[in-house]
Image (tube, rainbow, N blue to C red; front, top):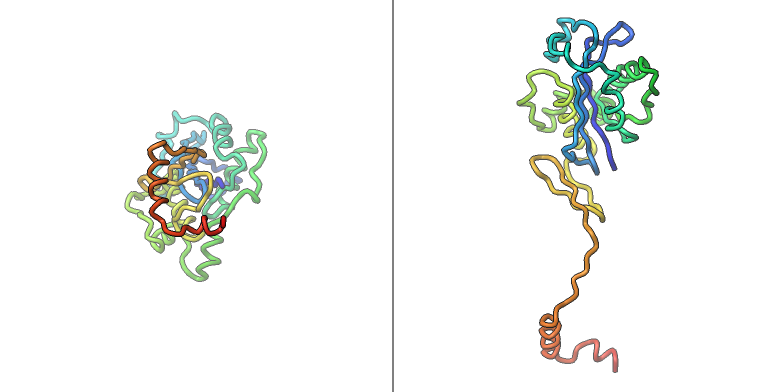
Length: 224
């Protein structure tokens, strides 16, 4: 099962007011474990970044002026997402901005049915409790030490950890076709091929000698 946590940073609160996406961050999970595969892009919004937004994410217009426009990264973003379930915190906000950008390029909108909203999940699971990403990280002891400001890729990583806790804890699901190894908090999938190792002549001889030592073996009783 492949899922992708997605976060965006923007120039403001509403695309209908002319605000644009300036960063996208995505983190891949397979069987509820991070794989180490990510997508991240800074985007030139072709407009200014208001001071109130800069104070939140620290991304300036100067930093973005030589970055690609959304049209240049749209295909790569959609290919990374594919048809996987997209996990977002306050999905309505991120999806509204992403679809606004896609529609500007005459590209198909991402359907709401492809998303999961961890804000809704948290409010349902912990009614009345703070449900911001920061609050959930503190609740689940997810390390926030590297988060001085918001950042799409960093927040997508934090969201993956929070989502795993909301859905039952950070543990690997059992599968019959793959092993999952945890390396620095991420998961490496190792395919398990079916292999046969026939016994050697020495092993067969040792086995025969061992059988001679068993008194009244059940298989001889059954044969008689």
